[in-house]
Amino acid sequence: MRSVLLLAALLAAALLHAAPDGRQTTTVQGAPPSLAGRWLATAHLTLGQRTRNMVTFWDVARDGDGLVVTERFFELPADDRAAIERADAANAAWTPSPETLAALSREWDRLPDRDVGLQSLRHEIIPADAFDEKLRAEPTAKDALWVVRQRYTFEPGAGTSAQQENLWAGVAAARNGYRVNVRSVTIASGPIPLPLTLVGPGTLYRLDDPPPDTLLQRLLDVFRGCGRTD
Image 1: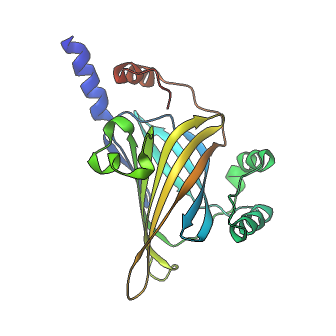
Image 2: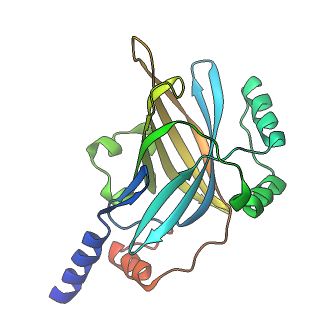
């Protein structure tokens, strides 16, 4: 019994790490969820009567027993940008077509980069069993399987925002990804840096085949003591 508990403690400790990737870093708390791969992340966010679609890309790689998130700031194809603008004007959610998802997957390595003036970006991956009191009280994270929390800092003069924090809460596995709840807080540049908070539903669309499970992940699933698949 002592050896089993020791192994579990060693595995948990190995997952508490930060992995640098240029201006972006990732910290994983506890056993990481099944997020390795390439993703299109979308959200339909609302503030009062104002709505907008947020669209971005994640490249999540395994790093030993943990994960490293790299947000990719790609320029969407012109047709998709126009469709998102129409959806924003109509206060509607943009949903990518199967053809769009296939094209983004196929062209991933050739999509043009977009300069957003990023200074730094910190990603935190937190499974439900590692939530602290603040996350357990967060409405966006209610009944979530995991959260990815992102904290951005932008170069001065790069745009209208000085800082931003996004919280993506995976609430259910879907056929090709996850359903998520999203909260985005932006602190605008200016003499009075007021925070603007937008919330709404979203989806993570997988753009590649899921990587095979590792022996370590199967052991962690046993130690977590539940049959739920994240």
